[in-house]
Length: 121
Image (tube, rainbow, N blue to C red; front, side, top):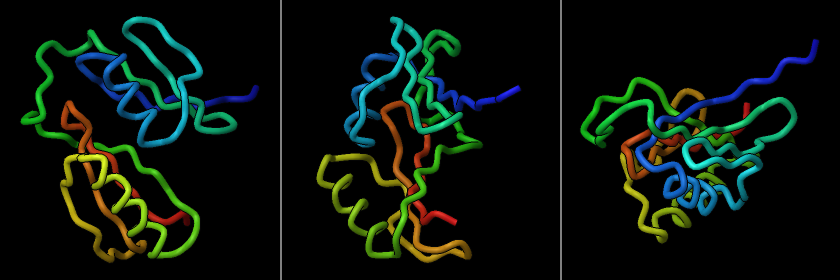
C-alpha cells in the first residue's frame, strides 16, 4: 500500500486562504471545494485548507504547530524568500535568524497559522 500524508490547516475562508497560500508558494490548488482546498506538494504530500471546522478562528488563538517550507540552498535563499514575502505584506512573526537546523523565519497567514521557512535537511 502506498500511503500519503495531508497537512490540514484550519482557516475561516478556504478560498481566501487558498489565494494567500497559492501566491506565497507560487502554485495552484490541485483539489477545490467551497470549504476544502488542497495543494499538491509532491509525491505523497498535500497541504489542505479546511474551513468550517472551527468557528471564529482568530489570529489571537495560540498556535501549537506550523507548516514548514524547506528550501534547497543555503542561508541566502532563506533570506531572499523572506524579502519576497515581506514585500507581499505578509505578517512577520520571527525575522530571519540562525537556529540549530539553519537559517529560518516565521510568518503568519490571515488566520494566524504559522508558516516557517527553513533549509532542507
